[in-house]
Length: 141
Figure 1 (cartoon, rainbow, N blue to C red):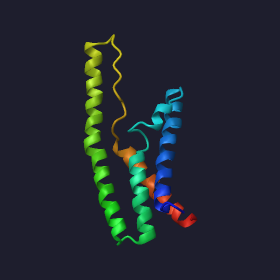
Figure 2: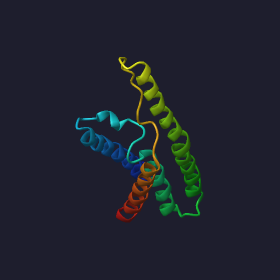
Figure 3: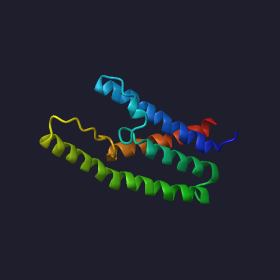
C-alpha cells in the first residue's frame, strides 16, 4: 500500500463525515445541500473524527507509548481545543452579527456562513466516530 493505512482510514472517515452532513442537512432542510460537503461546522465534527481516527490508529499500530501516537495526540488536542474555544466563539459571533445585520438591513441579502464552529455534542460524536472507525479498521484490516 503506497499510503499509511492510518492515513487512508482517517481520510475515508473525513470524507464519510462530510457526505453524512450533505445527507443529514438535505433531509433536515428538505432540499439538496451539496455545499455541506465542503462546509465547516455541523454534525458530526469531521475535523475531530479525522484527527481522532489518525491518533487512535497510530496508537493501535505503533503502540500508545510510541512517538507517533504522542505527536498525533498533541496535535489532535490542539485541534479539538481550537474547535471548542476559537471556532465556537466565531460561530457565536457570526450568529449575533447576522441578527444585527438583519435588524438594520432586512431587505439586503447578506450571506454569512452559518456553520463555522462546533458544539460540544458535535465534537463528542466526531470523537466517537473517529475512535470506533480506527478500532474497526484495525481489527478488520
